[in-house]
Amino acid sequence: MTADITPDKAALRSWLPGFVALAAIWGSSFLFIKVGIEELHPLHLTLYRVATGAATLLVVLAVLRDRLPREPRVWAHMVVVAAFGVAIPFTLFGFGEQRVESMLAGIWNATTPLIVLPLAVLVFRTERLTARSATGLGLGFLGVLVVLGVWEGVGGAHFVGQLMCFGAAACYGVAIPYQKKFIAGSAYSGLSLSAAQLLVATAQLAVVGPLVAGAPPVPGDLSLPVVASVVALGALGTGLAFVINLRNIRVAGASIASTVTYLIPVFAVLIGALVLGERLNWHQPVGALVVLLGVAVAQGLIGRRRPRPTVGAGAPAVPAAEPVTR
Image (cartoon, rainbow, N blue to C red; front, side, top):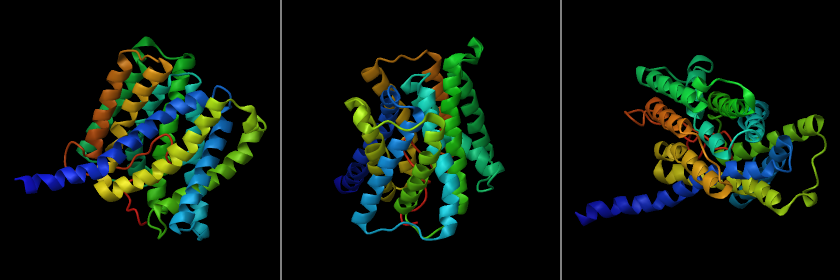
């Protein structure tokens, strides 16, 4: 009996610490965004964090002796993936958190899988709609309405901020199936593709940021908490977190690794409450639970189908369910 149980415990110990660490890192990203936008325009915050993340992954690539993609086709598709998987959603979360609590932004991030599925079915034709997934979408949509508190009326800065966070999740919903259809079959590693994605996003933000928000401030003019938040978002939330995610997929499998989606909003809420003293209305956590139930049903966690990939607020939009060696 002991011989049968011990390997399972050993297997759990091999991936559980990394799994929890990843949820904590991505869940804390919303806190760092909240701190960063106190002194930085959302576009400037995104530019700095993405550039830091790109530099981190380039270092990891060099250490592992991996290389960036060399096919022009891949780089052309990266223009779309970088925009919808990094530049736009990261910026929208920044704008959103100017109006809503960081913990609420973390809840909206969890709606990503509900947006991925209909777009994958109707637009990219990479998935099929089943009765189970349709039921999950219905539950998730109900949860979204509860989170919004539509019975209280719509409008105002808070409502607009929630829509911006939902729009960020919708961008992931475009980036993930797009990448799955046009890029995931390439011979390059997930690390290589993510580094390329962040480099392209950095170039996009370097052009758009100054045109919209003016020249970014010199890092030396920023306070230490803001600089630390930028470094944490880039090096930790995008660079290190991606490496941890790849290890989780390799050790625990894509199905288990993708369920980190369910822990991210938990950490976002806990960190927002403990560090920033934020509070939610009763219907927001209730709606979040309904959303997560819908995600679980749609992904097949309650049933036989494997979960679909998701991303966190600091993660490049690389499908987690794809093999590490792609």
